[in-house]
Length: 210
Image (tube, rainbow, N blue to C red; front, side):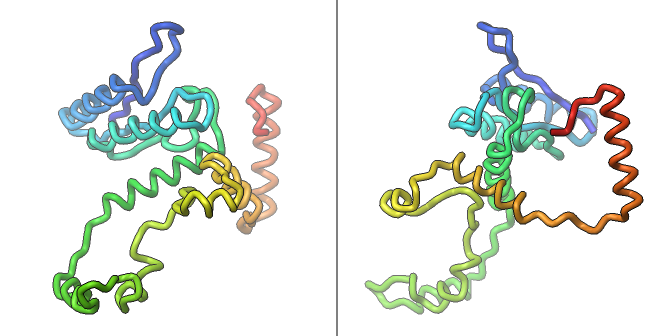
């Protein structure tokens, strides 16, 4: 696997910057180099933002599109990263998962049955609408991508429900996932071995897990 991890720096501070136009072009070049040597390419989708805000979102999207359009085969560091990889956020992780799921949905093969299409059109008389048609009623739950975080309600409905922004909603998502988590069955001997390994690593100077 050809792995690349490159970007420019902030010339005012020397800090690495991600999701920049230069980083996107570097991804394009890395993809070309990987294909030149005949290897699959590992890319990433990082951000230099220090908090899960609008900057984190557009830098992630810039990085992700750079990797995707560059022909990435495997993407690491694609969820949760902040501060150029020096910190992470569970809210950012959830927001990134939402965007990654949307990417996956975008690249699904579109299926079109022309016979079904014309029959669906014929179901509705001129001047009518398709919201109540048999085809719509049969497919409305599965026809479109269902978001993990996005709120598509109007302003009034959103306001009445607490006016929470995307980061606040992502906070609720990860807390619900963690709260609902049930550990899978694990042999007690293996659990004890893992706990012993962690304890030995901590005594040896490894960073604590908490």
